[in-house]
Image 1 (cartoon, rainbow, N blue to C red):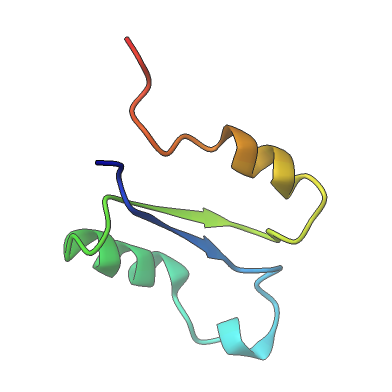
Image 2: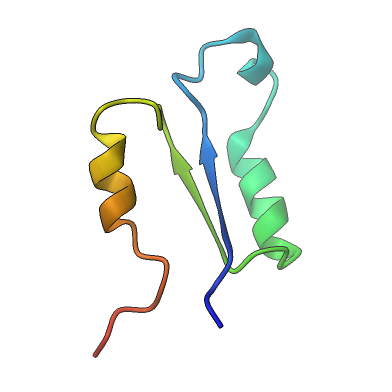
Length: 64
């Protein structure tokens, strides 16, 4: 079965909803509680280069 992960988009991180949010603590808490297999942080998933990022984002262990 594939691994489950959380990819958190923080836009630019400048909007009021992010002012008091510690994204690193949120991601670490989710990771520590083992709610998912991996966590990642990405600014602006809506940006043009994000399609390329998502195509190449590894959601499995690399073959050896």
